[in-house]
Image 1: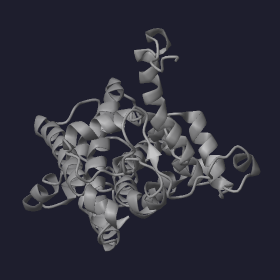
Image 2: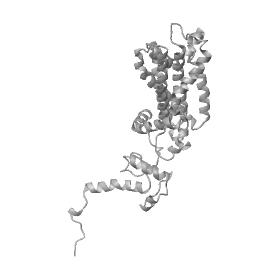
Image 3: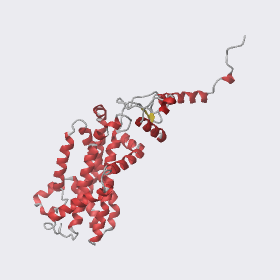
Image 4: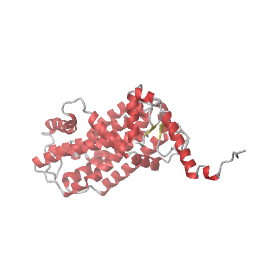
Length: 357
């Protein structure tokens, strides 16, 4: 009688058994309609199947069409059993994990920024040119109204009023104001995506802040053009403008994450923030010199962190000098502290945010 024992040479090797064990979860994930967002080609195929779930080709091949409730598997989890989209019990290290998450999803952030800039003006005739026209038109209206009142914006400065005005409008209402509102409402506008695929929420908040920074950089083009037309000297300190831009980006991201964490539970926070931002524009010397304020009240203006950001930006732009050391300290401390606090609050409230979305 022939022995039923397998010979050692016929047994599968260790590498073969390991390869089969690793391939089994991936095969089950494909059969279940799961998506590996680390695979660009697979993600595009999944997107086409999501738009046309009843395609005959998928049925003939025995594939299940992807639905909105399909589970998303991340690359690197092939050897582990299928896990839910969000693990609410996972421990998080707020600041370190958030920075690592943003770096891991840098390609997605770039795509979302491009989408935000193109979709925003998709139906308009001028399109992206509105990023240049919006600050110019706003500054033009203020220039018509206040040019006679503030002919010389500050003692010892001979810069034209339009340059002083446009620099303030670009930094405070455009960069800070629009960026905070966009970052604060980013989760509410991305609920459909977050309910389908596993994408960290901080990616959308940071994308909104990056888009505001890009709009600000576009607005610098007409500002430098006006400085050239008015023969305003451009000092060498403009080379340090990226420092001011990065500092403001950190501030917008931190404040935006704080607002986004609260706006998911109370959407009225967005409307309340718009009112506060209108007050901030008037409380910061955006279009008027601080010298017109009585000396006993100037301290309240200088205590506003945005005043130090504005002094840093204008000092680098056309004054050719850095602001006083205390202004630099306020910018550095407020940027780091608000960013860390915003990331920490956002990370701690993420479990409740997912349930609300």
